[in-house]
Image (cartoon, rainbow over all chains, first blue to last red):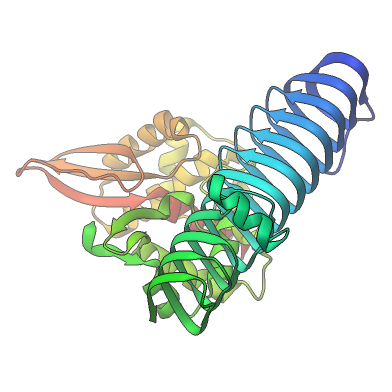
Length: 223
Length: 208
């Protein structure tokens, strides 16, 4: 992964290119890349489309991006709207905005401020979610999981009447879990703190459990 | 197969590892995706693992992780054919395989100075089977031919080698990993080897 050819792709305006291996890929405007692309740095300002897999050491996406295959970036920063058809893997993923992943999402650190829809499993050492609206993942697993809700209580409640503003998952499992405004079938872990406005069917904990009085937990047990 | 599953909860309790560790190892491909078996239970969905395999693997990881990085361990456990090739002389010197199996290989495919990884695995499995004493040299030839012709088709996916004998006639099968096989009454399943285990063992021997 260390040697890259010296070639770059630079798109200013509207253009498309074939895939391949590059040092730097930068798209300002509208760009389409046909095929897999491997690069050291991927940056997109505007609209981009990768019709294959994306692999990059550093990637930053400002604007709209669509990736047809899987994406891997050691460091990924998203400000905008991204759709990934495959899975997303990386070391450090930071995102502000809207992200939709059809596969799994795996990282060492996953930080999200916005809305995400992950159809597979979200698996990271440290997961920090500040939800701005309805987020969902099939499973959320990791060591340290923090789910918070942005914005005022009042607005959340008001919006909540019309649409789901919760973070929804079937299973949430981790060693340290702290939740707010979350809906889950099962929450399992070591130390669990369930903050305001959660709806959880079953909690299984090992060391410690706190439940906020405004949350609904149907059943909880110490294992 | 049903009895040999262990739930995630029991596994963590038994081995004393944390969720964080388990999922970190999964991310690093130390634990293959297809060992995570999802089943619905009365409490909702639960994840189960093949008990013997996962306990063995976790034991290995825990023993090795102080001396090797997680990425090195991932290479060790991966069933993929690596780009590795070995000099025949080197292999002989280290006496990883017996002379008999060595002769069988050269008789079949000719003398070669460099052994490809696939051939190396075939040789190692042959040696393993011969040592059990349940396979004759003639049958060894069939084994080599089977591995040579078909092993590549699995393309790095885990597969098992099955050795069946019926009324003295031997045959070999290669099937994808952990699928179930049923035989008629007269046929005898002499041996079933998970090739990924052999590869692991071989890699350990080579890295010594």
